[in-house]
Length: 361
Image (cartoon, rainbow, N blue to C red; front, side, top):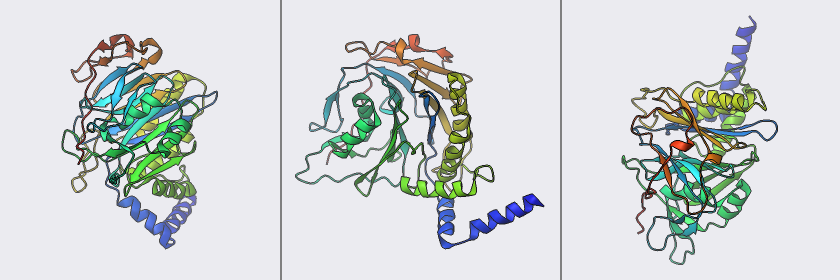
C-alpha cells in the first residue's frame, strides 16, 4: 500500500504543471552522442574524474605521453594561435588526430564530449582572435593550465576561436569541453550561436551531451526534487544519464582509500554506459560505449578501460619522463594488446601525431 501511494505521488508530480511537462518532453527528445563525465569529491583532497566515450564507430584510440616544451599551433593555417606546452600530459587520442581526453602532470583534466547544439564563432574582418582547429582544443588546455581558475580566466579573454571539423568517419565535430583540477574545481565551455558560454563552479560535477548545460542543470534540479532513491530515469539518453551520474557520483561512499574511490567512480561510469551493440534505429545519434577513463587527480594516475578488453590498466604520470626535450611516447591499443597494472614503462618513443587541420575560409 505504501509503495502504491508513493507511485501515485510520483505520477502526480510528473504530470503537474506545464514547466514539468516541458522538462519531461525535453528529456524524451534528446538524441545526442552518449558520452558522460562525472567528478568525485572525496575527503583529504581525493578528486577523481571519470568519463565514458561513446561513438558510432571505433575511433582508433591510443594513449600518448607528451612532454613539456613542445612547440604547438592551432592547426588552422598560417595565422593559427601558437604556444609552447608548459605541462606534460597523457591523452587518449581519437584516430591519432585529436586529443579527446587526458590529464596533465598537475592533475588538470580535460574531457571532450559531443554537443549537437554547438555552433562556433564566425570571425569578423578585424577579429584579433587566432583560429584553432577543434581537434587541438583539449590539448591546448592540457598544455597551458594547472587549475580551472587559470583556464577560465584565460578563456574569458578568448585568445582564439574554434573552427569546426568533420571527424575522420564523416560525423560533424561539434563538442563542448569540461575541465577539472586537483582541488575539485570544475568548468564547462560551450559555443552556442557563436558565443562562448562558461560555467564555472565546484558544483558542476557532471556533464553529458544535449541539451546545453544550463538546461542540464534544470533537469538535474527536477530529478533531485524527486530523489534518486525513489526513482531515476534509466534510458541511454543524455538527460537520463545526467540524472543518474549526478545522483550516484554523490551517493557513493566518500573514502580516503584510493583504490575504493577509483572503483566507485568506475562503477558510476559503467552505470551510465551504453552496452555494446545497443542501437536506437530511429535515433542514430545514440551510440555504444567504446571506453572509459578515470583520472586520479590527487595521485596523478590515469586509468583506462576498453569495453572490448578484459582489464583495467593505468599510467602513473610520475613514472613517465615528461621533462622538456624528452621524446613523445605512445601506448598502442589498436593492435589488440592487453594491458594490466601500471603501463608507464610500456610507452614507446613515437613521432607525435598531427592534429586534424581545419580549413580557414
